[in-house]
Structures are given as structure tokens and as C-alpha cells.
Length: 496
Ligand code: GLN
Image (cartoon, rainbow, N blue to C red; front, side, top):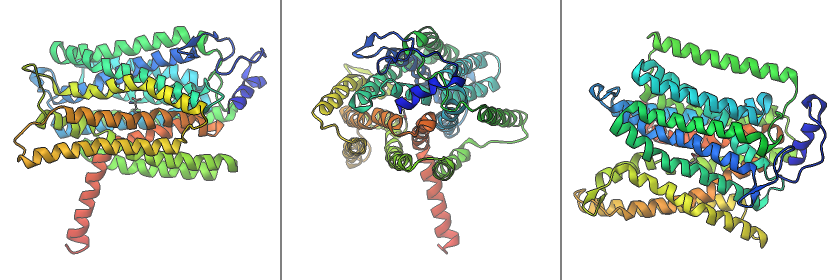
């Protein structure tokens, strides 16, 4: 794949100079220094993604609190159900946008420019949200749309470039992704601590603004370091056909036009969106979209027999990942409520905030990611590196173990008629096992997508990967719409 990637740079239409081959993982014109023994380009991607995730996880928990806060407290005064549906739709759209974002990078912009434009859009989105608190409510939702579009361009493509740093593939690439994943979680850990204090205690706009500042730092980091450390990696898109570029530009413009029209019609009250029912329908639509996409890939993707085989493995991993995220993404919802209602959070006579228990996952990821990086490399050296499917199976097993722990904890609560609060260690152990599952599956999944993706579909395959997260984020809504459908079926269609 990397061989092909370097060949693209040699095409005259790419307008590149012919230099000596750089060492593996170092683009032409990049420094050959290293970062924890890995190509130095990893540091640029690590810090850019760390700040992007800081901005994402900085506002996600704040959104529900802000939207449900009373008008007098500066919030929107929305119902809890409406607010959490909006957050569910937002989180799902953020990951869903990875599919067109990856496609645009493959076919038009190239990974590097896609990341840059994505970062700009995200920063503008945060700015719009921070200003909306002071000026106009509509700017809040427009800001969220900007973040969705920007993350769609940035998230899949920055992950795809990490793969390009390891043309040799193998366990070193998995290890590189484990380090990259640590950056993600440093951002995810610090963000709510800062934006929570600023947003909840000082002023909403400060919390949202701080997340925006984080994205700005990420953008500057990327701008200053990308050329020096990545050289020409990800500069040229997989397709250099001008006719295809025109088609993609046109489709992107139509897409943006449709979104703008929907925003105008909604803001002027011509169409009314019910977030609760939209969230339910979306999950089903997304499953259908994923299915259609895979059919398109097989029928019209122009894949070779070998590439088709690899796409079959991608589909298998996609199914595993969807199940995993559907369980894992319960952390901010049902496990969070368990922490609030049934967990004794008093430490030395002081009750810690519910949200603090959420940090356990990121703490464990940061502590364990280097262990996993080491584990994959040392198993690889002995020729005993497990396959990605085996690692995924372990991921699901450990996620399941995390829920067995919570099943026990719930039994204790139920046995006491719901009148006691259990030790926080139940949740901590559950997060510990879930994190082991996450580290066996998530960075490995990112890495596998870069290995298995047909060359022309690198960005898009990363989009497919994040689509599993999108569906996982809406699974509760999916289940409740299925339940309602079954209830309708048994009462009316099937005669009760
Ligand atoms: N926590 C990881 C991130 O934010 C994985 C998220 C996901 O794919 N659901 O990138």
C-alpha cells in the first residue's frame, strides 16, 4: 500500500520532484528524528488529535447540562429527553460525517488538506457556539453543524495518516496507534475537568470557549509542524483525475447546499424537527447506509479479488465494533446514572461529582496504552502477534466482563430494594475491564482499517470504522424504536 502511495507522488500530474527514497515512515522533506522510537510525524498527529479531542470531549458533557439548564441560569430550558436526543444525534453525526470526510480526502483534497480544513471548521464551530450564548440561539446549532462537518474531515484522515507512517505495517503500526490513542485520551481526560469548572461554575460561554481555544492550539500545532515532520505524506489525494475532482466538488457543494437549506427552513419554522423521534429513525437509516455502502463498494468500487477479500474482513470487524461501541457508549448514559443514583461517591467525608467517575476510562487508557504498545511489539517479535480478529474477540470479551461486574453491582442494589448505594469500586473495575476491551479493539481497529483498506478508499474505510461508533451512540434509540415496533406488531398487526 505504501509502495503504491509513493508511486502516486511520482506521477507528473502530482507535480512532485524526484528525491531519494526516504526511510520508511518518513515523508520526503521530513525530519528523520523519532518520537518514543516512532517516526517524528507521530508527534504532530498525536498533539493535533489530542487538542481536537480536548475540544470534542470538552463540550460533549457540557451540552446536556447547558441545554437542560433553566433559562434563568443561562441555559435553553429543554426537557432532558430532548437534550439527550440532540446530543445523541450530534455525536452520531460527528462520526457519520467521517464517511463523506474520508471520501473527499481520497478523491479531492488529500489527507493533509482535509485535516487542515476540518480543523478550521471545528474552530469556527466552537467560536459560533461560544458567541451564541451571548448573541443568538441559532448560532449554537450552526456551531454544532460546523463541528460535525469539520470533525468529518479531520478525524478519519488524521487516523489514516498515522497508518502511512508505518509502510511496513505489522505490530509496530499497532503500537503507533496505541500511542496515538494515548494522545486522544489525554485530551479526553483533561477537557471535562477544565470546561466543567469554567462552564458550570463561571459561565457557559467560557466552558465552550475553552474547548475552542484547545482546537485553535491543535490547529496551530498542525500548521507549524506538519510540513517539517510529515514531509509529503498525505499531500496528494489517491485520485488525481481532474474529472473526478470536479464531480466530488459538485457533490460536496450540493451536500453543503442541502444542509444550509435545511437550516434555513428549520430556523424560519417551515419544517419542525422532533429530536427524539429523529434520533430513533437515524439509527435505522445509518444501518441501511452502511449496508448500501458495502454493496456499492463491491459492485461499483472496481476492487480486485484480493481487495474484496480484505473488505470482507473489514465488514466483519465493523460488525464486532458496532456491538462493542453499543455497549461501551453506555458510560455517559446508563453507567453515569448508576454513578449518580446508586453509587456511594463520598471520599473523606466529601461527595465527588458524578462526572469524575467518567474520567476512570481515560486514566486507564493513558496508563495501559504503553503496556499494550509494548505487548503487541514483543508478541510480534516472537512471531506470536494475534490477528486483528482475535484482538477484537478479546475486546468484546473484556467489555462483556465489565458488564458482568455491573450486573453483580445491580444485583446488590436490587437485593436491597434500591435503597443502598454501592461502592464506587464496582464502576471502577467495570471501566478497567472495558478499557482493556477498548485497547484491544479501538487502536487495533484504526490500524487494521489502514492495513486492509484498498488504496483508493483509505480515508473512506476510516469513515466506515467511525460509522460503527455512530451507530453505537444511537443504539438505545434504535432499541426503543424496535421495541415500539414490536409492541405495535403484537397489539395491532398480530392481534395482540
Ligand atoms: N475514544 C476514542 C476517540 O475519541 C474512540 C471513540 C470512538 O471511536 N467511539 O477517538
